[in-house]
Image: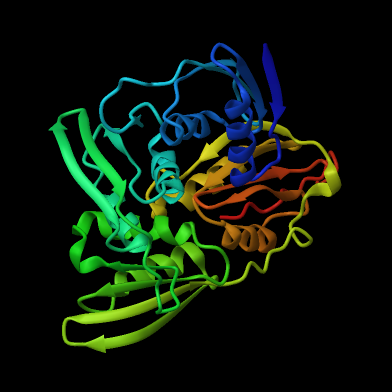
Length: 347
């Protein structure tokens, strides 16, 4: 017996709810076939951990925007000692933090899992602590090359933050190489209007320059506290001014998707160049799916100002840690054949 569900064009929360519900209703040996426009495997990993249940997974179709996956329920994991293991070593690095922070959010007090990773996941600890406070249980079980095992648990309810910020990062306690990437990742997960407080030994001007370069005018920066050895800066994500109405979506026209460009693993300073190069390589009628860990709206404004009338921009997903945008060159509005004047590229 099998159940088929289609979670195409659903957000992360609804996708997880529907997949969990279908598997909860399935008996051992029964399958749930999931059709989606994004890889649903991370959600099934969460199910294994949060339900402490065995699920065998096989892909029947996989590709950009078109996934078909079969999940078969096994007998429960009775008899296993300790917390369930969450092995993320074969998960793309760009997805790990988002999936793991979301999994922690779903834990009840006293619940947890053993994270298995291929390197020290200490930046995740700082991110979880910034969001939830001192209720993050963190205990190393193994520290071997290629296999780090950490027991992560929720020891109580998350403390309310009375500062008005969604999260607070005290970077004085974070190793220097991890500071900026961790802050950018957390900022990318904020919704419009939310704030992030960064506590540093001095005003983090290099971070401000990075934000200016990457986010343009889409953030607020306010020094809220300044004393010897401690400066608190509030960074606020501004409301999204580029709505679906002013994004050039081509009135529903079809573009041939040439590739998917996921820039989440790239340093912020290299992302714009890679995106511009991908756009320059497009032929008329082609597009690519840009995947980023925050809203790339500043790029939209730059393309709109500098690219020709063939430029198209269409949001496909807006989720914490995963924004997907179709960027393309439309046949409609492009220069007619024989026009010797090339359209200026946005570089």
